Structures are given as structure tokens and as C-alpha cells.
Image (cartoon, rainbow, N blue to C red):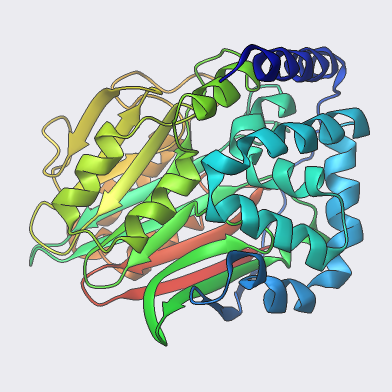
Length: 375
């Protein structure tokens, strides 16, 4: 990277850092009971040029473009999205197809590329939401819950809640997407229209993966983008790369452990055989902890990960894991290690809360996946 490039990069970083200090956290909202509908399923043709892959799907949801712009404009002032758009020019060679897909999405929506890039790097930019969640009062959204469970016959199940402070008119962009090559499904994910990475995905017959946010401080701009420039992958792009390569469980787990990522993250992974279940606690460049079935610190048959290191107590402001463990152990392995049991836990407050916008249920051995929109 030459000196002129780095000078431009640092200038953009300065603009972003300045506006990060000025951003106002989104308004608090109280929890209300949610309703649930099954997401629509669409096909993404990987044989198309990357700029064209999402066009037909985005066209169906083009009426959501103003709501997307309003949402991100409320979180990120225009100078930030413009600076992000300029940085995107420098990241294009590192992002490959994903950068081209983002450009195609922006064009199809008819909105600025900076907005779409912000959407796609929402994980890295998440800290601008600020605040701490609180299960007993209104709280800021920065939450996810993943559960991997094994029944007495060694069947593995995987469920997740994705909590994001999307208004109801944007929860409609939650979809299930089948990625096909040569007219054959390669992998499937729970997705949001316009977001080209995957927070939840299944490689049918092999494994499934979900992403949970891990917040360790630092700058969401300078640290994450510098990591990308150094060759790290966005946590959600890594998931898509792994399911696209059709690795077996052990190969996927190795990739999740060893690949540099642009931000700290928790990965939950489920397989198809006895004890094929794990939570990988990641720093950007190394594994902080590997937690696998059978659990030796609690009930051996499941792992439940929220947004805090599992070996530490829940913080006083967010006891979702404590409640989730109570619900799972209350059901017991016979009921809890089932699709219905996990879904029940993921549908109970505070594991499900006002910001739960999507729930995904998966069983890798059968290739089953179902994505639900939560309102």
C-alpha cells in the first residue's frame, strides 16, 4: 500500500472518527410481545456476474429503499456514508465479488453506495448504537442468541435469534435465500435484502453457522478497516466463504478458528454427528476460547451463547443467558434438544425481546432451515 493511499485512508478515518463522536444513539424502546411469520425464500444464482446476482430480489423490495435510507441516515450522518463510499473504492480489490454485489445492490435499489456499504458492514459499525442492554427496562439492541443442542440419539439442532433495532417496516426485508450454482443449491441463509454477507447459514448435510456480536472495545472504524486492509475478512463474509466451499464440519471449524477477521465475534457451529457442536470465541487474529459438545461445565447436551464470554457471569444489565439456561434445563434433553424445544426457548422473554427481528432454525443432517420474521 503506497504512501498516497495511506494518506487518503487516514483522512477518511479522521472524518469517520469525528462523526462517530457526534452520532446520537437510537431511542430506547420497551419490549412488546412479538408475532411471527415465515420468511419468503428466494434464489440467488451464483452463475451470474456478481453485479447481477441480487438485482431480481432487490427489485421486489425496492419500495423499502426509502426506509433503508431513513434508518441509516438516522444512525450515520451523510458525511459518514460519503466517506464510507470513498473508502469502498480502496476496499474493492480486497472484497472481490462481495464488493461488486454491493454495487449491484445499490444500483438496483437506486440509493447511494455508502448506505449499502454501511448496511453490509453493520457488524463492524454496530458500536455506534451505544449503550448497554437491560432485560428489565428499555435497552439498546446489540444482542443475539445461538443454541446448539444434541439429543440422546446424537441428532444435532441449531437455532438462533438475531436482534437488530430495525423498525417494523424494515423487518419485512428479512428473507431466506438459496444460493445456487449450476441449478443446484449450494448453501442457504437467513438474510436481509441488500446484505450480501451471512449472519446465519447452512451447508445442507454438513454444518450450520451463526454469528453473535462480541464487543471488546476499540474503534469500529480504524481497527476494523485496518484489519480488512491487512487481509482479514468480515465475520459475515467468512461465513459465506466457508459454506460456499462445502467444507466438512471439521474443515469449517478450522476456518472459523484460524481465519483473521475484522472484528471480534462468536461463531456457533453445528454438524451432523455426535458431539459436532461448538462455540468459537474469536479475537481478530486468534481464538480466545473453543467451547464444544459435550459441555463439561454444565449440561453436556447443549451450548447457549449470547454476547458475553461464556466462562464469565452474565452482566447485571443482561441476563439472557441465565434465563436461556434456565429454560433449556427446565425442558431437559428430551424436550429441549428438539426443534420445537429450541424454538420455544428462542420465543420466550428475555431471550426474545423487542429487537428480535429474525429467528432461524436449522438441522444440518437433514438440510432443514426455516427463517422467521419477528414483529
